[in-house]
Amino acid sequence: MYASTTQSPVLLLGAAHVVDLEEPLRRALSGRTLDGVAIELDAERAASLFGGGPARGSAGAPLFARLWAHVQRRLGAEIGGGEPGAEMQVAARLARERSLPLFLIDDPIRTTLLELVRRMPFKERVALVVGAAVALFVPARVVEREMDRYAESPQEFTDELRRVSPTVAHVLLDERNEHMAERLAALRARGYGRMAVVVGDAHVEGLRAALGRRGVPTEAIPFRQLRGTTAPSTSPS
Image (cartoon, rainbow, N blue to C red; front, side, top):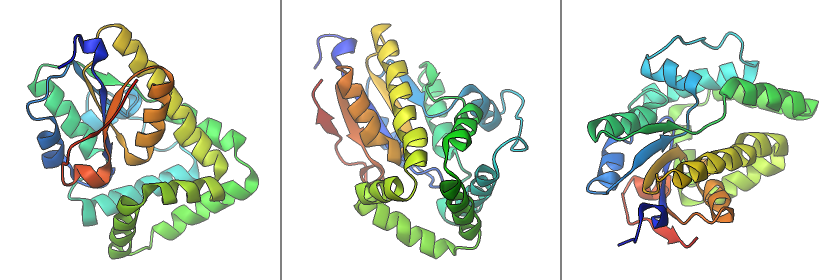
C-alpha cells in the first residue's frame, strides 16, 4: 500500500488507564504489519510496571499524584478489570510475541510532576489536591458514567481541563505531546515508520497534531472506537 515504511502513517491508539483493553488492542493490531510498538511510559514507570527493574514507589511524588495513583488502583479493580497500566502491558506483550522493538516515548514522570508543581499557581495546586481527595470517595458507577460521557465527547472534557487548570493541561498534555512526537519522528527517521503507539486517550488528538506539524501522517483509533475496534481515521502528512 505504501512505497516505504517511512511513508506509512503512525497508528495512534487511545487507551483508558483503568480499563482492560487486551482484546480490543489485539483486534486492532491483528494482521497489521508493524516495525515497532511505542507506549506512553518512561524507563522508571516501565521498570515498575513490567518488574524489570527497581521501583522507587510513590514516596517522593507530590501529594496529588499519590492520591490519583490510589484512585486509579481502586477504579482499576472495581470497573476496569485490571490494574492501572494494563494496556501498556498488553502492548508490550504484543511486541514481544511478534518480535518487535518496544519504545518508551514519554518524559520521566518525576521530572514532569516536579516541573508541574513548580509552575502551578497556588489556586490550581489546591484544586488538584481537593479533586484527588474527593475522587477517593466517588462511587465506581459514577466514574463509569463519566467515562461514557467522555467517550462521547472527549474534547469537551479537555476544554474543561484547560479552563479549570491550564497549567496541568499545558504540562501534562501539550508539552508531553510535543516531546513524544519528537521521539516518534526520530524513530521514523531511523526507519521505524509502521508504528503502533498506545497512549492515554487525552493525548491522541494533541499528539496527532504535533506529528502533523512534523510532516508525519497518522491514523487514530480513539478510546471510544477502540472499544468497538472500528476503522481508524487517517490524516495526511
